[in-house]
Length: 137
Image 1 (cartoon, rainbow, N blue to C red):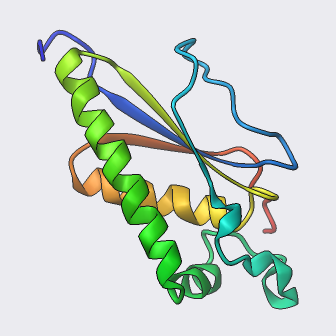
Image 2 (cartoon, rainbow, N blue to C red):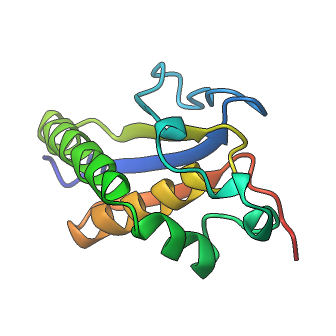
């Protein structure tokens, strides 16, 4: 890649299918990956987790106990990383990735945060946008 070209930025969104719906790509490129987290265990169905989000340690612990969550994230990571590397080679400057769950509060927030961590460890420039995450503070 030419050093004068802008570096690739990976924008990772979390959202609720039943709240805002799939986010629009603000760059005009037409979007990227959309991963549906609704097939994962849902902490939002349990009373003690309803006022928490995927950023809270209790939700993270809840989701980490299920091997299918880790499997989902590892498979998603492989796809995203491979595309990001390809985009870098081709001089693209943006890749949009979205994780959706029912309300955009628990599973999608958790997955977006974990994916951002994975990709940052690989040296990618990542920004995270939580579209529907409530602020309970």
